[in-house]
Image 1 (cartoon, rainbow, N blue to C red):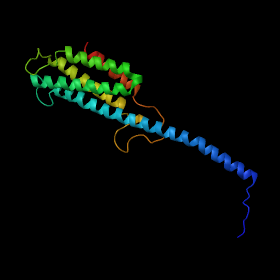
Image 2 (cartoon, one colour; image 1 turned 180 degrees about the vertical axis):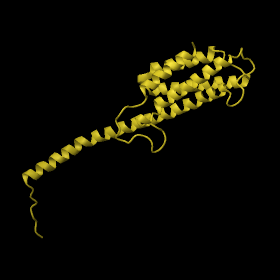
Image 3 (tube, rainbow, N blue to C red; image 1 turned 90 degrees about the horizontal axis):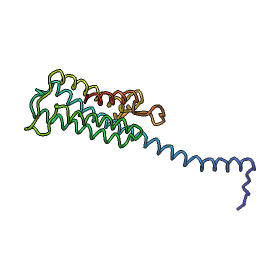
Image 4 (spheres, helix red, strand yellow; image 1 turned 120 degrees about the vertical axis):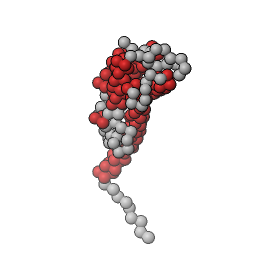
Length: 199
C-alpha cells in the first residue's frame, strides 16, 4: 500500500476556506430571511381572512336592511342585525391586534360601528323590545354606507394589487417584497364611512 500525500495548492486552500466561511455566515441570514418572509405571508393571509369575515358580517346586515332577505322592520331581523354588527366589531378587533401600525384607524372604525349600533335606533337589544324603527330613507343610507364599509375593509386587506389573498395560488410569490396590506386609501375611506354612520 502506498501512502500518497494529498497536496493542495495554497490558492485552492484559501478558496475552500473562504467558501466555507461564506457558507457559515450566509446560512443564518438565509434562515432568518426565510422565517421573516413566512411570518409576513402568514400574517397577510390571516388579515385577508379577517377582512373577508368582516365583509360577510357587514354586507349581510346591509342586504337585510335593503330588504333582500325579507322585511327589515320586524324586531327579529333588527336584533340579529345588531348581533352581526357586533360580530363585525369583534373581527375588526382581531385585525387591530395584528395590524399594529393602523390600530388607531381601526379603533375609530370599531367605535363608529359601536356608536351606530347602539344609538341609531336601527338595531335593538332584544327581539321583544325594540325602539322605533328608522325611516326608509335612513335605512337606505345606512345600508349603502355599510355595504361601502364592507367593501373598503375587504379591499384594504384582500388587495390583489398588493398580491394578498387567502385563496390558494393567488397570493404573492414568496420573494415578493412590494407594498403590504392594508391599502392605505381604502382603510382611510373605511374610517371616514364608519365615523359618518353615527352623524
